[in-house]
Length: 154
Image (cartoon, rainbow, N blue to C red; front, side, top):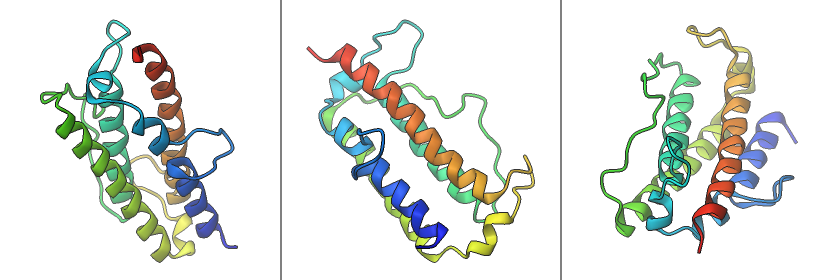
C-alpha cells in the first residue's frame, strides 16, 4: 500500500469508516437535526452548523492549495452565521460536505506522490503537511461537534 492510499483510507475512515477514534463525521451528523445544528449552547461559541461549514470551506481551501492555487484566508476564518436554519438547508450543507469528501478522494486517487514534497508558497508547508493537516482539522472539529451534539440533544 502506498502513502496516497493510506491517506485515502484515513479520509474515508474519518468520514464514514472505522477510524481509531471510533466516531465519524457522517454518522455523528446523521443524528443531528437542523434545529440542533443551529443551536448555540455555548455563549459566543460556534454552532454545529457553523463548524460544518468551516470544515467544508477549509477542505475546499486546502484542496485548491495542493493543486497550486494561492488563496487568502478570510478574516472570519470561514465561520459564517447561518441565514437559513431550515431542514432543507441543513441537508444541503451535509450534501456539500459529502461532495468535498468525494472531491478529496478523487484528487488523492490521481495524486502523484512526488508532489508531497512541493511547498505552498504562502506558508512554506509541504503538500504532505497540508493533506495531513486537513485530516487533523476534521478530527479536531469532529470532537467539538460530538460535544456540542451532547449539549443540544433532548
